[in-house]
Image 1 (tube, protein in one colour):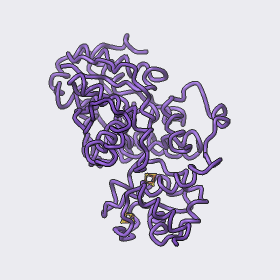
Image 2 (image 1 turned 30 degrees about the vertical axis):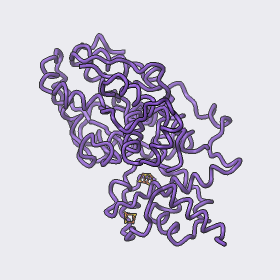
Image 3 (image 1 turned 180 degrees about the vertical axis):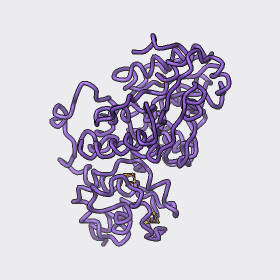
Length: 130
Length: 261
Ligand code: SF4
Ligand code: SF4
């Protein structure tokens, strides 16, 4: 029987559609990532740790919420790996669990000001809640 | 020429001027924007996960409305444009996804990417033509303008196909057409911080500052964008030069300052 970790890995690979084995570990994705300084695990490490099945540390990391979905890593990866899709799949693994939403309605009043566009709130909701 | 127009939620609310100027300029340039009936918010960002269906239905409905009308679909907001283009691409190229969506909507008219989707800027470039826009300029701009693309309008490049994602020129072409001087700067296609402004404002501030400082250093007197969230982030995080929508810049040149809101 497959262990839990293997099932999570399979699910992440399915959701992201990414072939992690194409990665040649050049680090270009991380070099171009605007979230680099804020992240404990960087885009190339997400790809590597999913490949090796060492996913537990990623599930616990705040780095999941530092990706801006800017797709710079996707467009600039020389191997077409699309690291952002891996990060999204790992994040979904976490926030789809009961009580694991990163953003709750209680958080909203504090961040609202007169100018904030609807787009900011709907986007944050879509990325950080299930 | 007629288009089905998808303004999106933000243009009905915090970014009304973006919408009003888009409509006013379209009238002057001779194309008609027919708003999609009862459109629903696109959700702001595309979810890349293969098993996400519900979050993409509003984009599919807009695409289907245009298909039914037999007209192309046009957007102005970069975020709507990104979500609609990525959804359209998936409907065209991912048969499993398309089957599930069509099965869910189940209205006897399956969608497989038949609608042509334009960003308003693409309409100006590819249909109206910048030379025709130029003929309508009454008040040529006399200023250095930093075109700010951010990420959503350009990436993923293979799907968006708006322009070269590493060296886009479409807004620069518009700025020149309007009599302005585009300035080139390194951060024009890097992210402003986007939605993390909600969960991590300090992080968004760093990203936004890097963008407007880069534009200012290159000599920009104003910045133009096609994204309400970019505009919000840059303005809120201390840009001390005006940040306008590209449609506002156009209205300045075609209609004049009186039009400013
Ligand atoms: S840029 Fe692509 S190939 Fe290079 S480390 Fe990142 S994912 Fe791997
Ligand atoms: S999509 Fe996320 S991981 Fe990729 S470059 Fe942008 S912020 Fe970094």
